[in-house]
Length: 211
Image (cartoon, rainbow, N blue to C red; front, side, top):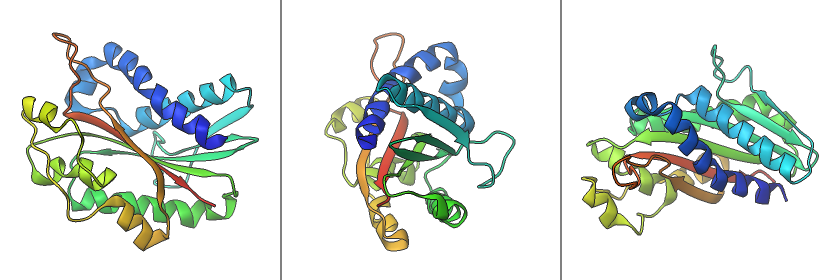
């Protein structure tokens, strides 16, 4: 049940971002969303979806993990389980950024592993502006394990995508014995001129069942 609510929230989040991008387009277009705004916006979206399904909810930032003035990791709790949201903004998609993803999970497990219940889910949420670097153009393959079907649409916008030697799913299995159950990416920005998706800006989601 919680998994259904989370997947619906992921699908609805793109519309939320469309509205947010209309209000803050210059900022998002230049840098992507801040980790704080990305994490908070999704925590609120998930809370609304839980409410629509008739579930009481509570969302709180995770205070100690990677502590900053503006938190970006959240826990959304309900009677059907909790979703632990670990958010990051990938300035680049290089090896240091990829390792940071794994380090964040390790920190979370160390600090909150005792509080995880059988029905809980982990959501990894990140965004990135695709650049000309090879590792940036490998990111979609690294995250999902495959290249998008619409690869010609990326080429039309000047983006050549490449396969990655490493993959997120393999790293999660190797380091944490975790396996993504549901993986998705979206392009929530549209060009004002022709309403085509801006494929250089991508948001990435990975849902892990913890039981």
